[in-house]
Image (tube, rainbow, N blue to C red; front, side, top):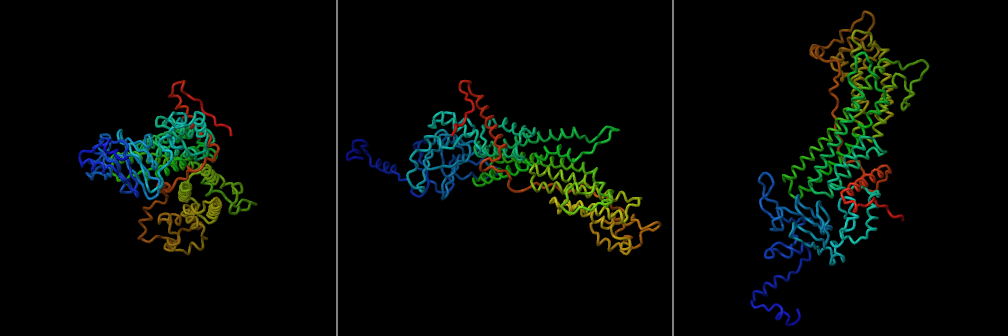
Length: 619
């Protein structure tokens, strides 16, 4: 003040007034972030500066905890007594390195530079933070150096901080842009290749329905994982931009739409391929080409749902981690959200399981009519040479081509649909399990009362099986095939032993040499082995008394119910949601969906306020 100004302007009459004036001359901290109060609720109780003493600073009204189990109320750093402040209203985290992060609690009215804050956002020095209808703070961080930005960030909207929906570019937000500039910004978004899909909650149902409908109808030429990529962009937008409780609801709606689309597709296939045919009408076996056409939609849904499930699991884990950091792991609203997420994940699990079951069902149904040729066909045709490893399908013996054709169709289909490698392995594991059990059961059945178990027939079967395994090895499936065909291979190996050598063997030595065969199966093969006219099994082949019960009561047939369980892949999703969209078909679909959202937004406006889709200015 100028000399004498204190006397003329303030004229204190009580020395206590000087003490009060001294308390108002506050110097802000120089080594910690703080909040400068611009507007409060009760002037007599509110402070001017609120210093952050921890990396995490919680604003709230305090009071009893709403969490379960009678646990103490969550820690609050700054108590605000306005009636619209929640017990835990807002959390700010400011580590050693900028930027700080601000996150509203569920249902808490918070504004950031004048815009409603729904998700976690960056908080920069000079930003305005509004809590409820009364409190307004300016965030300051003296550690950043300088006096803050020359232009306060809350005067215009921060560049790039676009609210949900494409119409932001034409809306009047005092953004300082001219109409042409805003139109160019919107056109750049509508036609851009950034993996971003903005929408408002009211347009969510139409958007998700359109993506699922287009995927179910096979419209367009999207890449195999295109539907999952588009749906993941919706999930990403909800997780980043929309209010906290929105993501669980979106996941539930998304999972139900996918399940309905898959169930409808399964019904269509079932109507074309009924299990029960009319009497007197022979059933036409499915060809590899026909089964590929039928199963392609199911495998596409299996592939897309698998990647989407992995992506959603990552988002749910992030939600749980954020809740743990804020001490809200037992909050009832969070628990309800996680329950909704678990229900959505369970539906996606169900879709993957069902599409897998239906796919292997029709593939095994096709294999069922082709497999008997491996036991019956003779690969040693006159004048023909046996193909070597890596031979083409056309070079294989005619009796093996139908079975290998099914395997080749399944391999091409899984590759075209970009099915996860773990699911590819399990699909073929199931097919080989079925083939092994079916062939072994046929081998056991055909030896009953017929001269089938003999060396010459066994050599043909062994050669056919070797040719199949060699072909599968060349297709990259050799390890899986060897594992699941092991029991059939061992049974055929037993039958391939020359008769003179086999007669020298005993039960105990055969049990040691062929351990995967059960006592009942081994006894069945030996008791029906063709040793010649009038010759029966030697006494050395008789099982000892200790194993007689297992031989008499054991089942010689393999059970189809002992198939390996389906284990869903773990790990990160293979969807690419960073960088530019390089696939032209995916970019075209992204543009179509953005313009669809633009049209929906424009339809809500009066006719004289609507704009046509903007066109980007030519360079």
